[in-house]
Image (cartoon, rainbow, N blue to C red; front, top):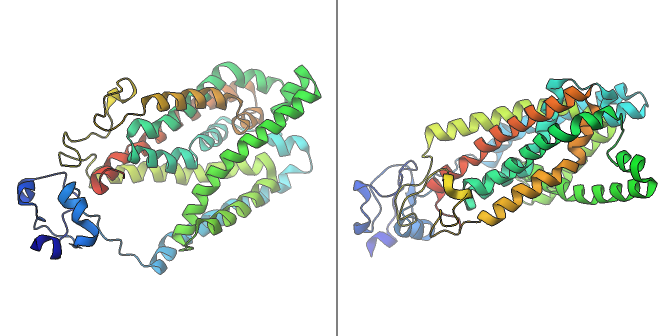
Length: 366
C-alpha cells in the first residue's frame, strides 16, 4: 500500500494512543507535524503498536560535547580538587583517613549516606527497569536500599559508632578474633567489586555518550582513574565532602528532570494496539497481585526478593557503615540514616516515575 512506501508526517510525540485523527481502521499515519517517518523505521512502531515515532535528536556530536561534556569535565575536576584538598587534612592519621576524624555533622552524614543509595543502579538502572517492566520493578532498588538504612538506623548506627571502630571488619576482630576479621574483609572486598563495577558502568556510559567515544569501555577507564585519584588521596574526608557536591547537583537534576518530563510529556501510554487497556505510571496492585499487569508478565516475586535482599544485605554494607563510623556521635549516626532513607525513597520514586513517560513515547520494550 502507498502508506507503507510513502514518507508521512511524524505523529506528535505528545499523542497518547489512538485518537479521532488517527483511527486504526485507516491504517495510515495521521497528518500531524514534527518530522518524518518512513517504512524502514516506523511502520511497525506506529501502524501495529500505535506508538508515535520519537522526535529526532538534532544536536551534533560537537554540540553535545560543548553543552554536556563541558559541565561534566568541570564537575569531575571539582570533585578531584576537593579530594586532593582533603589529603592535607588527613595529616597522616589513620582515624582521619578511615573515619574522617569522626567529625561528620548531620547534614554531611545524611548527604553522603543518601549518595550511596542513589547511585548508578538506583538511578540509571532504576529507570531502565521501570521502562522495560513497570514502576515497581525499578522502584524495588531504592525501596530496598532505603529500608536497609532504616534498619541500620534503628539497630546498628549508634552502637557501632559508640565502639569507635576504624572499619567494619574491626567488629569481627574484637568479637571473634583475627581470622574472622580477615575473612569478613575478603568477603566485603569481593562483594563491593561487583557494586563498584555497576557504578563504574553508569559513570562510564555518561562519559562515553557525551564525548562520543563509541565504546563505553573507554569511559569506564576514565571514570575509574578519576574516582581512584580523589578517593585514595583523602579517604573518607574526600569521599564525604565530594558526596555533598555530587548530591546537590544529582538530587536537584533528578527532581527537576522528572518535573520537566511530567509537565511536557504524557505520564503513561493511552489505549492503543500496544496497550489494549491503556497503561498507568504506577499500578498499586503491582506488588500484591501477580495478574495486575496482564497480559504483561508481572515480576512480583523477583521484586520482593530484590527488596528483601537489599534491605537485609545492605545492613552490612561497608559504604554505609564507614559513614556511620565517621559520624561525630551515635545520635547523629542514627538520625543521618533516617534522613538519608527518606531522600532515597523520595528521589528513587521520582526517578522510577519516568518509566511511564518513556513507554508512552517509545512503546513497550522489546
